[in-house]
Length: 189
Image 1: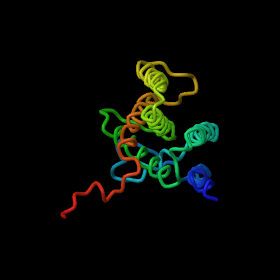
Image 2: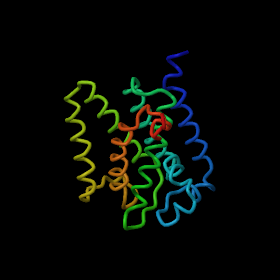
Image 3: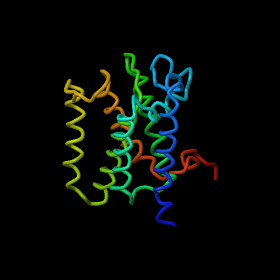
Image 4: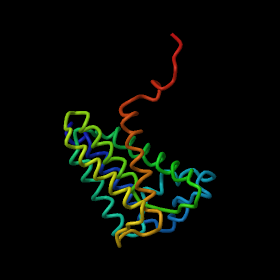
């Protein structure tokens, strides 16, 4: 049972919530990130990452999440997986909100870039120095996207910026991993 609790519960919980939200298309407009209204609503900072354009988009994102969690399972437990998703979601959204142009999006791909980057950083810190090649390839992919290359399956003009914002959150995840919120607050002794 301990093995099951390590990360499967979190993965199943996240996928179940995403599937539920995908089944509620009437809610999508209220849950979608729109940089001009997101701060007045608040919840789209998180919810937009768990809804998708269609089931094909959702399934690709679900598969990406499952692969990251299973391949790097030693870095996850249920609590950290949920926390990492929430932190990366909020941080990605805040970065996109700060941009000087309007961004509207749904989907998990930005957060997936952050989770993947976090796992690669953990691997490098664990002594797998060759992972720098994967990090450089991931950064190169995002840079090429920012320079204008977009595969046919990209929908929307800001996918590259979403991926870049998500990738930046890898550093935040690494910095905050497994830290308690109370540790961030100075204590009087």
